[in-house]
Every structure is written in structure tokens, then in C-alpha cells.
Image (cartoon, rainbow, N blue to C red; front, side):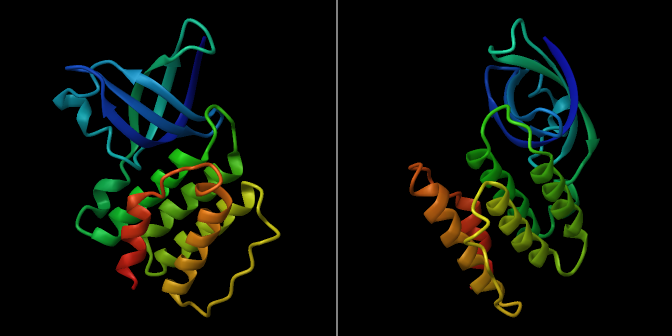
Length: 191
């Protein structure tokens, strides 16, 4: 089994001395987890920063087994915002939310496109508004469109709080998930 796709790095964790396990959100294949041999080497490390856009080559002996990735960096995202704590936390918040809410190996091109659009908006002054809109579009795309009506006249704190409540009521509490730490940190920046 083999495929090639673009995606964004959602997380990484050490596996052994030289390898890492990554989770990526891909355009054609949804959220996928796999092993990267040599991923913790000095040469490869810069590719594996949460939020970076990557090209993934996935291989496995069979579709239902954990496979491994060969990865190339397509576009560094996170490094451009290392000097901006709020934007860095925004990336970590969004990737954390996708990690816990997206089902494994289920394609959702609308969520992918809206996530990409939100990341691209980090260069603009109204980036937090784009993030808030992204959370709402994610909630709608995951099936809670009827409940989502928001107009707080650009009150960032109220908007983030409203979204947090929707996420808690519809996903976090019913599924006994842990609310992402970075999402709390992001909201606290605007308190």
C-alpha cells in the first residue's frame, strides 16, 4: 500500500533513538499517523515543526496497519511566527483541536481548506478573527451547524468563549476528551 499527499504536521513524538511518530492532516487521506525513520536527526528535525506543510509518502504492508512516512518540507509555517507568542500558540491550538476531533483516515477537504486558509491569514492584522471563523467552520463541518450563531461585534474574548462552550458541549464532554491546553492559553491572551 502506497500513497503520496500534501498535509500539515499536527504532532510528533519520539519513538526510538532516531525515529519519530507523526500525525499529519492530509488533503486526500485525512488524519494519518505513521513512523518516520531518521526523523529526529539534525538534518530532518527542522521539517517536523507543528504546523509546517509537508509532502508525505506513506507506505504500509496493508491498509489497516501502521505505516511509515518519507517526508519533505513543502512550506515552513511555524518558524515565521516564533517571535510572536500569540500566533505560535494559535497554530498549536488549531493543530491540537484537529488532533482530538478528526477521525483517523477520514477525508475532509473542506476542513483542510479552511485550516490552510486560517494558517495563511496569520500574516494579517485580523488573524484572530480568521481563527475564530475557522473554529466555527470546523464545528459546523463536524455536524453542529444549527447551533452556531455568533455576533459579538468583534469582541474576541466573547467569541473565543462562545466557541469554547460549543466545543465543550458538543465534542469534549460527550467524548470524555481533554480540552487542548494551547486553546486555553490562546483564550487567556485575550482576557
